[in-house]
Image (cartoon, rainbow, N blue to C red):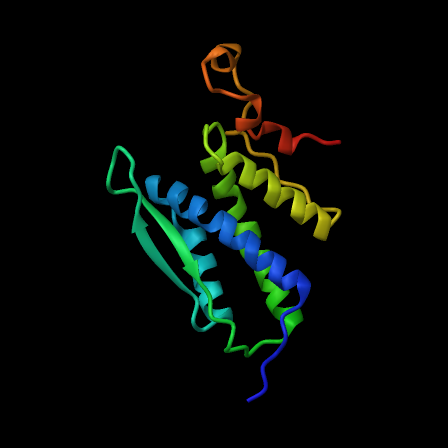
Length: 162
């Protein structure tokens, strides 16, 4: 059986999904609003038969929080590259709002991952823009005066028109 090759765009989109899926899962899980995320995971399973999500407990205040790591096996291609790329774009569109909400205001590496993902998406698709989200707001003056809080931890500026 001959393997289909993976396009450069598909490789980039796969990497972006790895970057944002765990944030989307955590955001949706905490709010019991996982239908969109679950649909995206099912689409990934349809596209790549050996796509799996494994959970590893991470050290936090609450041991019920999980960090999801992704394992991909690219041996079983059934769809053409263009179809896979189109489906991956749809998966990213479904996951990204959850990942942005999760990362917004966190004082971790999550906001910088989202900024990198958006930058790469704009590089791939110059007309790419995030849809406005009323839950994402600039930090207050008081928040910015707290120690170890940076303006870049807040993702409101990703929604502004240039």
